[in-house]
Image (cartoon, rainbow, N blue to C red):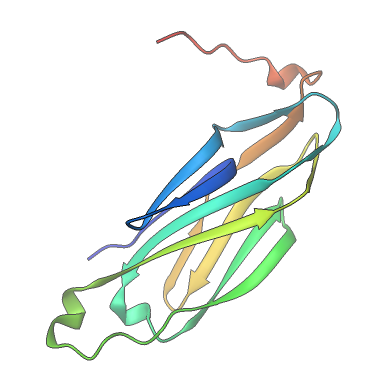
Length: 144
């Protein structure tokens, strides 16, 4: 069984009944600022992992990085697997939000999430932060 991991960068996450999460204000590839430095009320990197139960019972590490500089780091303890015969066929699902409030966003940031535990490691795609005045911020998005 293969592992799955992805990260959504957004303004907020609403926790709902039935193990559902609703990300609000999802950023796609770029976060465009009105100024070169701007304080956002909140910023969330929502990482979802599905890893084999063999990775359970260990402590992992999650980081929000700007380039190679860790903005936030923390340990994530995954409990030991249940004592059942079919544990080798089971996967462990984890939802790991990194919430920063307020968030000091700056033109030129390259945000990404790193997570590692046991034999599994994951690096998210990069979210580029740029001011509206930055020529790279001008992109064409066709109406669908």
